[in-house]
Length: 605
Image 1 (cartoon, one colour):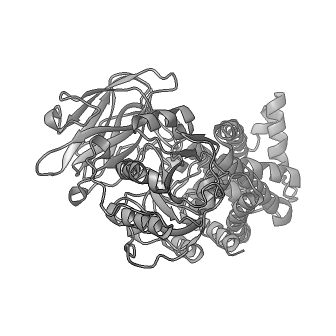
Image 2: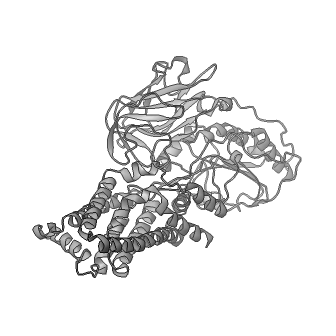
Image 3: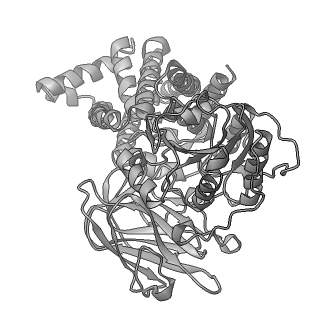
């Protein structure tokens, strides 16, 4: 119940957000009509449409998003016509084509000079159109709701939470309409300016339509903070779900939604250390029972495992995903533990929970398992069933289970590998295993698996898709879900980045539409990685890497040569820069010589 109340309050706060601006003209255009037969049906239509579309977008994938695109086009045309008839009332008299006549009748009914305010049905239809266009800013509260929707799938709670959010927004809009209606009536009586008000509203409606049609509602207003409510929303979220301490944070799955796509934000980060453990001689508390593993959609290297079949074994469950740099740097240790202790009663289970859509491709995961030389069981958790059963939130995350099936310890993020190995030894000793090794594995990791240079990492994980994009620099801003030619920006500040060439920025990634596009990033770290993939046709994409305008030479990563040349041949993390010696600020640029490149996220080490 508390989460429903918080969702409602988040919706109420929406009216203070700049992202509500494009729909205000549509709502206030009804302010001079009777509220019960005009304003209320409009808000009802808006609320129900938003809740339905948001639910589908959060759980339904691309087909729902594509369907909504057509609805948006129809809504834009309808509301543009509505704005024109407000601006030029006699326009409907000259438009007699059948489809336009329907719009004319709607607008005539919606603006009946007889004072009835038009039919309830026409106001409801205008509300539906407004709901199709409404793209609220994804603050912490909406981010929490939609993240849960993406992880839990379609259910009644998801829809009711989104409905509560929309009802909150409708409440504040209703109050604004009631106040606005009285204000308009007072202005009419004192100035006799009804026709001018009507025309001003028509101009405002058309401006709102134009803003939405050109993407300003999601591309610019999300980045403007006229009256930010983020701090208030975050305080409400923390009351419901307190955030973990910084040293526990790995990467988190996230979802955002705008009207153009199912889009949303609970940002992940890079965890270099994690919580302390009690040590080999300390008592380990019981944190719960090993939950069901039936949520996995497929198993690699093993038949499906169950808590019952694992009784008597010490179990390490490792949540990972193959493009996560934090996971990749932890895997050499997990792999070493699996090899060292498999004959002494340890079972390692890697639970692959995808962050990006391409990581749901089982063939991609199978290839990653082969490349990483993982031979222990891997559960494919594409639906986050195992993730939810553990109530997990992080990549990487390690859960240590004793021989009785009880969770005795957990560790989030990278680091403290010696401590984790001692936990394994302690649980094996408790299980009565004789001759458990007391030594610590020696790992010499190479390439992307090598430990990060944590002292010199100043640049954070940076997403390129608009769902979680930060510090993007471009004179025109980021245009979402539309082909756009970006010009090169000037000198960049540290941790800022830009695009050049013809790109389409989607929810998870930016896709290059024509050859010779580039991405530039001003960074400070030893290593620079970029999650990349080829286009839908799968054709390889050649690229060239520069650092401060020159070939990287000895600073090249394992996926580029000394001249900076490389090729995208699959969807994965590419190591492009690895430096030796003192680390300072540098400008990185990657130019793609062929079209089709998809860029997802920068990570550093």
